[in-house]
Image (cartoon, rainbow, N blue to C red; front, side, top):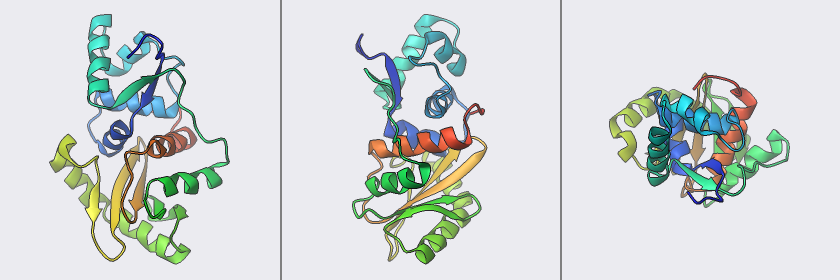
Length: 206
């Protein structure tokens, strides 16, 4: 991180891994805190050490270096920028950026489609219900793959060519179903996760 890069920004890979992880380790706690906006801007070493449960500056520095190398976070000269539009408008726009065909569904743990783009309402509802039913299977696949999995996703290949990814934000859980070719390396994934975290989990525990 350069001297001018004062702001920690979650990277898409780090968000994907943190969203599907069940382990409550320092990397996940830091990424979720950054997404929720629960870390001061710019973040202080003491705060990062508290989240990572590290007590000395040298250990915190090594921790941050490892997270940047593993593409969990990065440094920037500006803080994380989020859409200013209302959530009902921002979510479909971000979902569209996550698919080459601009088709994706954000579902709740109860199987309800809370945002969609590119799919008719009835199809989106069925996709959200399917994603919720697959939740335990997604958890098992994530546990077996670890960080070697393809950006924390489980691909379901059928006529809709869906890629389904769990989004675990502490107490709340969502599912992201993307049609066509997924673009989960996009910064839109970070913005999507941050909007959800700040709406539903701000001030919550990782």
